[in-house]
Image (cartoon, rainbow, N blue to C red):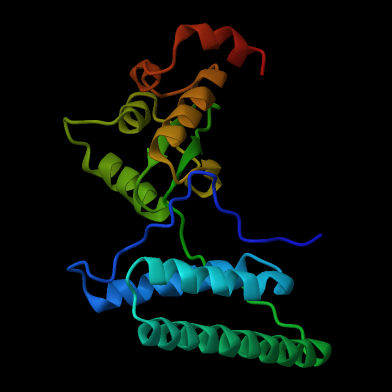
Length: 218
């Protein structure tokens, strides 16, 4: 199976004319792109044919012969050097891999694109979409309960009203999703799946009621 550089039947052969008032760098870059197509998109047996086609096309667009050959030769040398370097790197990698096996383990200290579940002693749960780090959000909950302000969250309200202790060391991340809207949908579904949740139902107003029977079967 071999490939050749394909051109549409509507191909006109018109490119950026050499007499146009464009920088020389753009004209040279256009020739580079033609050479790349001719050599990288086709089999070796078609290279000579495609190279002749490029030269004829550029001549029809008023490019000087010297400019054409200088630019084409420059690009061909670049492609050859890239090929040689790629082969050299591959051979070096084979020799190294025969002796060593490398594994890079990334260090991920915290997660923020998630929502969590906080358990309470009476099995009530609270879900919260997390834009901040998990340890930061837990510390905020604890401080908010200790301050006992008038502006209370549902967690603070539940703690002070029922004197229930939350299992802060038993917090579980239910889902991680970098896309904010997808994360909201996942949070609403998990809230609806619970029968004894602290969350206000306003957290699920974006979820259409037609999905509730399906969620209840999960």
